[in-house]
Length: 284
Ligand code: SAM
Image 1 (cartoon, protein in one colour):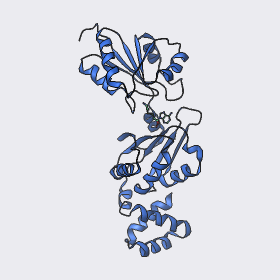
Image 2: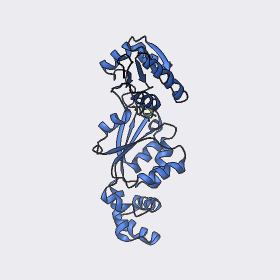
Image 3: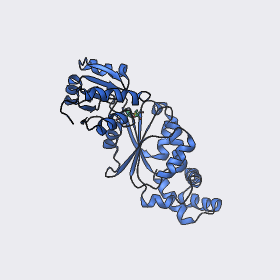
Image 4: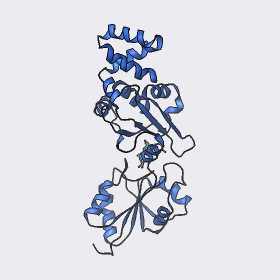
């Protein structure tokens, strides 16, 4: 492709703390002919902070295809464009995919300017295995679709990560508690890089109680990370969430031995399985 064509820069911006932007990102934002932003009013605060006065155009979910075609024409005419989203890395649960694809398909250069990304920041501080993980974006909005999603993930041995809003964090954890063993380690990373940053690593059962009881734990922006299924966990899977909940209640009142004996009588499940599950729950 002709070197007279412009380049598209995909620029990561902060996820809360305005200082979390690279020198190179600021330079690029100053140099380009146009900045394509998800919400132009939102990004203006960042640009003002760094004295950037470049022209802004809007590129959001509703106008993406049309705006991307217009931007491609500008790139072909030799203008350079920076793509930014409201926070973090564009395209990651954010607009930009159609533009990047269009520009790549036209044979033009797409240059990443790396920086903040909420789930990578959360993963780096979570204390969960990072060798293999899956990023799942936002969860489905209905409870039944969420439970179907959790059923798909329950046996996954990788760490899995999703984004959640303050409006749905409690409902999502409650749905999770019906499918995922309550002893499973999870990390709730909330308000990263901001004043009320909280990163809690605990069992799913404890996390659920914490979010139910503490209103502050339902405020702000969330990344949730879930440990993969271990061998012992897989065995514990053989008992249902309902049986697990019964054991949990019994364990609050009696010893492991008595709780298991009672659970065997009530559920008819094999003693060995209930004993393994009780040991895992007791560690919570
Ligand atoms: N592109 C962004 C990135 O690179 O992380 C994500 C954009 S997505 C529309 C916004 C979601 O990311 C929020 O609802 C929340 O789940 C997560 N998120 C963004 N900033 C966050 C922060 N400071 N702390 C925790 N989660 C955050």
